[in-house]
Image 1 (cartoon, helix red, strand yellow):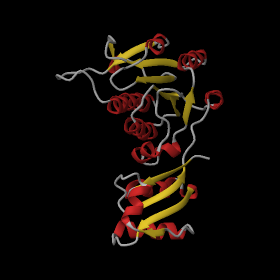
Image 2 (cartoon, rainbow, N blue to C red):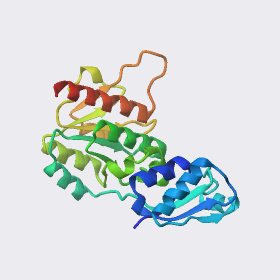
Image 3 (cartoon, rainbow, N blue to C red):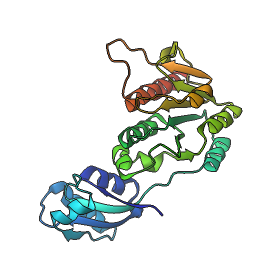
Image 4 (cartoon, rainbow, N blue to C red):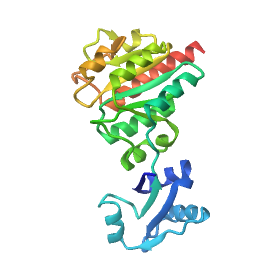
Length: 248
């Protein structure tokens, strides 16, 4: 069981909304009078959890000096699933598969944002690499706003091998790359799909790129060369959703 502390009004509210049974302990600022904080305390009491009233110095220590807004809770973090879990999910999946693959993504804010969009766009699961990448952390959960609880995250040791297996299951592997000649708006995303996005500033690794059936890009009309990873992922996932809704 992986226990971590999360903090802040928004992230604690998300924990209460999506995984209240996984909250174990809570600490609150005994001197702070805040309507939102008071409501969170009442919600915790309704769960049978009485927050410990402490001073700000104690909260600062619990939250590693981050902005805790007067509340810290200890929760059981969502666990990354295995390659075996991924295979079982693919083989038993109903509907047209849609997976998001993150190749060595290390920024927890980007990962959390990708999870949030993946949930909204109906992604069946997010595949991440075990090495040189962030897993599910308190920061990821905070940014994901509950999506870390709802979107399965599969951690694999050999991404190239996993992509080959997905292709054997008749799932198209499409990579996002700035050097692609084909844009997302010229691409059919209604097929069974694993969309692969590379790391911040580095893009797809060579071995990952070699496993892609197709590379696609977003048209850039201004002076910047690329979009933020999570923004680009959001655009691609929503183009996928748009096309699939049109088909339906």
